[in-house]
Image (cartoon, rainbow, N blue to C red):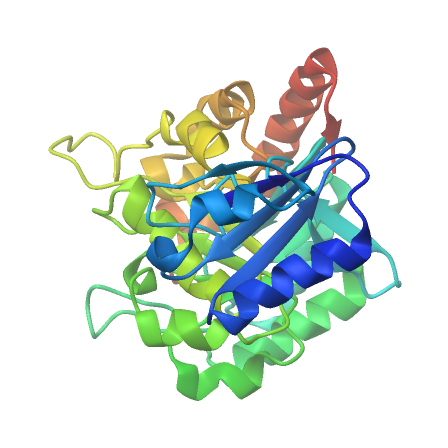
Length: 342
């Protein structure tokens, strides 16, 4: 349920209204815009008498929301959410709004030389966050699974060397304590509907990058975001990484239409992972450009200093030089559209 308040409603009356819903066992989300304040009521609102709410002298309008996701719904929060990520220097990186954020780095952390060299290279080209897998979900049990705790230690070393906040994937709640100094926790495609993990991350004071599942609908994806937000953590970034279709010429199929649909349905920032979507290095540039044109808030690109010897997904990784060329073209495109890179 959405309640639109009248302009200049008294704070005391607003609090009295909210207290009434709290006593009914309902939670609320207040979004104060420049001209309008919207209150989203979350829970079983079937017991709420709409006419009674409309009778309140500070209420302009009441609307019931049919979509099952509430906190992630743009109707509850008309303005775009901007997720702020603290940097080691005391500043913040922003994902959403007018900012276009590039996250780059290797699929997996392999050794100190590799992660530091890549981190320095992507920073020079304009990346604002460093990605790298310490724990790797692999189809084969015999494939490289990541360096685990040592991988996180090396990511933190690269963070210290470059000042880039780090993004890495959580595969199990058993490892959550290891992520205390990680800046953004990634929930991978295979864990998008790991509801126990999502609920726990709802109590976590960190931004969550939530990737879309391989075969999940947009509504299912938003409901996963809702699990996190229902726990109180509203710092959620959605990431479209391609879905599984009948097409075999690419690793996955990038659902570019998901970007404007998400922007219409939700206020959460949306990123795109063109590396996993196509699995082909030369396609990263056109897919990144398409993401910009469709209104995405950023991209996540795999970069490796020696793709031919990478232990994981080297075939889809860009070299630092190729990444620099892509960044130059994205910068010009964003400038033309009046947006800011970084």
